[in-house]
Image 1: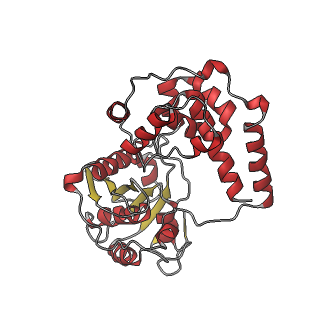
Image 2: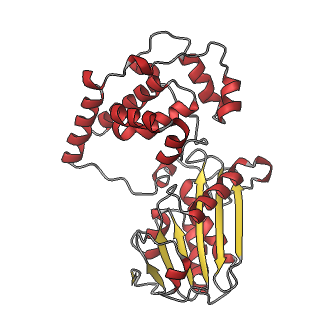
Length: 328
């Protein structure tokens, strides 16, 4: 670990460390608290958001959990607020090891990225950091099996979905510029090589060799309703309505797939490969990966929402083509 922030030498960075063993971490420094945080937003920006926090007292082994939901906010605000909530639970002078899957949070804490947005929250977090002894940060890959990261995600999701307990995010102001703060990583224009590779990938996905086999077509149940999809899968009503309308047609064009929208973040938006292999089987995953390439997860998210597998794969192919055309 090395200091990254000349203005605050108390902040250390343990980048991409894979160990999650508290005992192993304590061999490096005597950490008084091991902290995990996560935050998210149903529709970013402007949708309901939530944060989740897990704090481990290394001396007693006691584990403290906190969460809270907000009426209207952004992903990044929830990530920063989660860290604030966590540190407020910790006494002055403690050495803290902070874990998060947010590069926006950790890179800004370390000083690598400038505090250009959410300054109301950064001033609060800076004050909390000053109360601590030494703080180390560690990035963990989200939805990758880390026990406490998964717990924080669960807490944040529960909070944002509990409408009666949602409170205002007083510092959030919706503006025409808010989309610029909705990404965890700054925009970077793809290189020429990246554009060529993406365009080649799209060509392969839409070539005859990548056509979707007839045995994947399946059968749409005519008695399926939007309400039944919402009840069964927990997706947004608008998404369920679009899927039902989609299957009222017998022949689907490119534009029909483009029109399919999730209606905001849902229960499948953050699901990763392991979930879909467990739910649909490895053979289905392999088929989706072969036909949709890097869009396999997108395809199976749509399959989970209710689209037939063939249409889910085609939806992922269409999204990839649209994305590639946008960067030309």
